[in-house]
Amino acid sequence: MYSFTLQKDGPKVLHDISFRVSSGERVGIVGRTGSGKSSLTLALLRCILTEGDVHYDGLSTGNLNLDALRSSVTIIPQVPELLSGTLRQNLDPFSEHDDAVLNDALRSAGLFNLQDESDESRITLDSEIAGGGANLSVGQRQVLALARAI
Image (cartoon, rainbow, N blue to C red):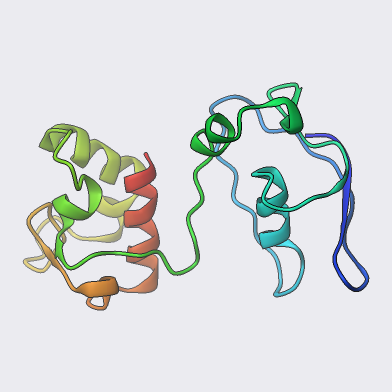
């Protein structure tokens, strides 16, 4: 990504931002409220106009197919949306993957690091998830959203 500037109806939100992300690298964007995290993400996905150039894989995002650009980026919100049903249904709503693939995604996301193997209340693919993930902690919801992305 090359430098760009974003200014809405007030002071500049982001000014001369520049960073690189290597292929396959996962990056978390963190910061205080109002620091520009959402604006940066929206600029990366061409949802808002910026001054300057935003590049993805060495190409200006303005020259990329919008669907291709947006399908190559995964965003995990602070409060991920989870549906009422099993964990399996939340991870794979169209039943395209077997349990081994889903468990690998959960392992990669770190879910199994958060719970004890002998714990009877541990989360499995057959665990029921309440609407919005109300029966899970915010951290568990984010880990499940990461597993879904993986």
